[in-house]
Length: 328
Image 1: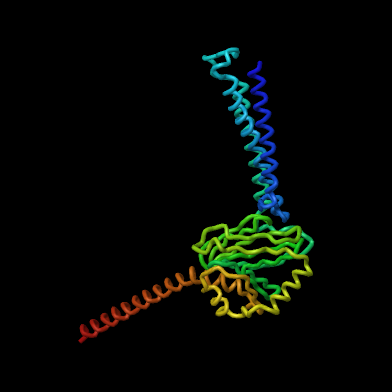
Image 2: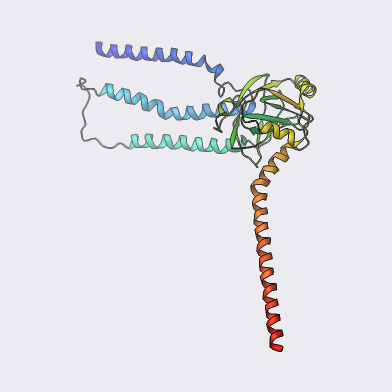
């Protein structure tokens, strides 16, 4: 009896210290970006994580508990429990260990299928306000943010209005990369010569860290930026500041000067942004990838056709000369 009481006391102490440790762990959630979401998309993704983990714990927690319980109950010193060396099957146990995980898998699969559509990065956010369009270019090793409607751009600083959807259109100047603002929502890959999309929204003002989530070279770790969510009037004031203090980005040559610097960068502002600069970046690279190959193929084909034409003309001339000689 005394031994049993000691075990009960031990389990109570373990439970108490586990609770205390959990409380200390939760005090750090303010810095956990994925948990401390500040946007509607991020909140839905956070809730999805909670739901998935909670469902899986239905299997994990009993398994851990039973592992400890069986080791204690069937210890060598416990001679009171019934010993069944020939026991090998139980329909009840088989039902539990198969049906519960199966039900959880079906539930998780259903949730995953629904959220894969409802949280698709290309799906526009339903809102009364018109989305702000921001074009994003991944450079070595910095981020260029273009605001085509405002005619301004910035490097390593992303300003957005609060409570207004933002439609990101993204590409890369060089290697594949990954755009990620953890507190606002999921990441999206960016690739040269292609355009991807991401729709996010900030529910409250704040400064949220943005990163590159895909290794892209020695400057990858420095590809960080601040996403500053402001009220609409403060966002408009920021745009005016960029217009007044920025440098012109009105030609592809000016863009190339930025792109050729292969290093991390401080925050920079640009005004008079070239119309359709983003489109020019995408099509120029896709043209190099596909148009160049097509052009080379076309040149080879033309050369081949020219060679065949020369051979045909020579053959016709030879036949003509032969016929002329025979006639004589």
